[in-house]
Each structure stands twice: as C-alpha cells, then as structure tokens.
Image 1 (tube, rainbow, N blue to C red):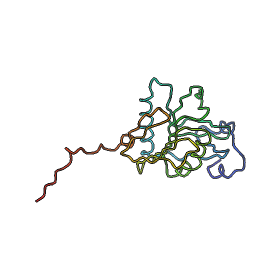
Image 2: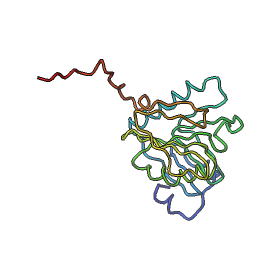
Image 3: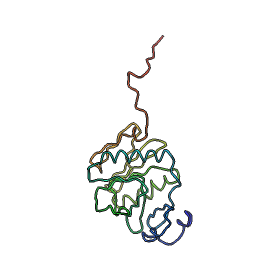
Image 4: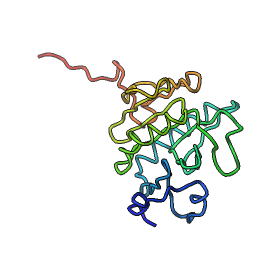
Amino acid sequence: MNATTAVKICQRWSWHDYLTWPEGERWELIDGVAFAMAPAPTIAHQSVAGRLFSRLDQALKGKPCRPFVAPVDVKLSDHDVVQPDVLVVCNPAKITASHIAGAPDLVIEVLSPSTAARDLREKKALYAHHGVTEYLVVDPLENYVIRFLLSAGYGAGDVFAADETVSLESLNGLSLDLREVFDLPPPASEAERPVVSAH
C-alpha cells in the first residue's frame, strides 16, 4: 500500500485497519481515507516542534494538562486518526496506554511543504468538527503562526508574527514567545544600536 493507492482506494479505512498496518509506516486517517505522512521532517520543522513541546512541558509541570509530541496516535473517531506534531490533553481520561482517545485541548501542526495544504484544509476542518478548542499552525520557514479558536467553527484565524506572543486560551492564557519558538535573536536595544553621526 502506498500514498497514491491509499488515497484512491474506495475502501473506508477504520481504526481496526490502522492497527494492522506495519509499525514502520506512518499514516493518518481522515474520514476513512488513508494519507501517508510526510517523509522525515526538515531540521527546521523538528527544531520548532521540539521547542514548542519543551516550553509547554516546562510550563505545565504539576498541572493536569499534559503535552505530547509526535508520533502519538490521536483517535478522534473510528475513521479519524491523526498524529499532530504537538498536542496538549487536559482530561486524563482521554490518555490511554497506546493513544489519545478523543479531542485534545490544543493541537499544533508545524507546516511541511508536502502536507501544508492538508493541515490548513482537511485537518483544520477535522479538528473543528471534533471539538479541538485551539489549533495552531506554525510555519517554520516564514516564521509566523495562525491561531484558530473554536466557536462556530474556526473562522479565518489570527496571524502572529515572529516578534509577537501567543496567549493560549485553551491553557488559561499560557504565553508562547514566538521569538524563542523560532530561535531568533533578541531585538537590539537602543544602547546596542550603532550611533550614526552626521557630518
């Protein structure tokens, strides 16, 4: 089974089918359609995902919400199984020994060129349908974040630049400094800026 046939095959795959596939292969199910995951992510992708997880892990120590980093299976329904890059679950009843059963409170997808359209289209609709409270899409190349909050669907979303801070409403306003997430140098202070004299 390859990416092309998985998408074209008429069969509607289920969680039971998913569990029988080889462990070395990574797939996601969206409405029963199997999508092959992207090849090994870029260094920039993995670095950003790692920093996001690390900050969430530090901030949530001792609290009921738990962060996870891919690969972790999230079973949203019998025909919807995904592996978000980073996620946070605040209801311990959803955390099983093998997977997350139900919608996380926060999902973060770090964009890859081969899967960006799916993250912004099919997976965005999927997360809204299943009640993910907050969905962040992070671009590790252009250094920006789009944040979607669940109300009546996700709407257009809010865009945050690399020099801004995102306040995570699903986690009681926990802040993410995007300059740190993207590992960018701090802004030069007035004292550090060169003085230009007129002649």
